Length: 346
Image (cartoon, rainbow, N blue to C red; front, top):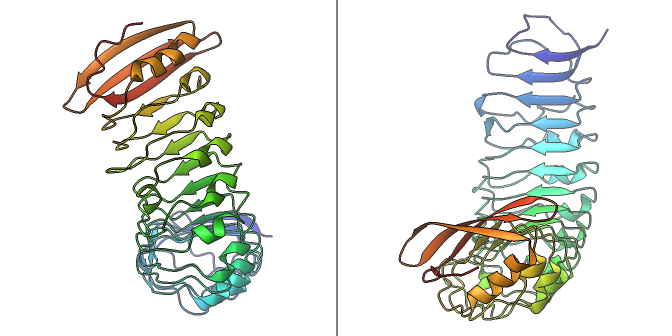
């Protein structure tokens, strides 16, 4: 008989029992038959050393969660987990990812976030055709992406945030047309904004804050094609953006818009009348914007009524909470806008 769940903190020594799901901690001394386990999670294990043959017998493993461990190095035997679909191993402390990981042909979720010592990805990472979710956020040691990276055409979620030195992403974006989530915030070395970004028509989340894409970006025409966006963050310390496309009013599903630091932006398009799902707008330090009241009024007049409450103001910005009563729902919108707009009349 195969039991379903083994919980290390509750089980005694059951010598050699078989389980489908196991939660292990440092106190576990029970011999397990790994050949039957399908999901394995290590809990509160601290620094853990995985030996070279650690997973050589886990032929049925689908889920491996090492999120509560501090892993020195992923073992080469990781490539033996032919059925693995989900691998969460943040905080890896070794410079390399074993090449054998590219043999995981069924893996669709790979999360190695917060591993700054990793300096390179496997050259054949593009062979992992089933990858849908990829998170390398905080892997600040990565500088280049292998040529095969463009082969990950099924990617839906890609996060390279806080990968300060990584480059070469732009040349692959054109082939990643299934992306719905893209986070390149604080990527300082990815070059200029590529035209291919405007072709990612399925994007729902886009964060380019404090990335090099914004350092030379004076126009943002690419946004007009991203009609499914719900989250857009273009904030920076000082962005030279001077124009937003009129087509921005096509982003009717937009809920979050952050333009903080776009200090050269002279005006906003009259886009707000169609953004009736907008919940957050940040225009702090956008002190060059003219006729802001017209743009905002176009939005508010689109709805049946509006009540504006000013909570506080500093030298450069004012926090405004707006409660909007639409025909079908009540929408709460937090707006951070530039200093001086204290007399907006509705």
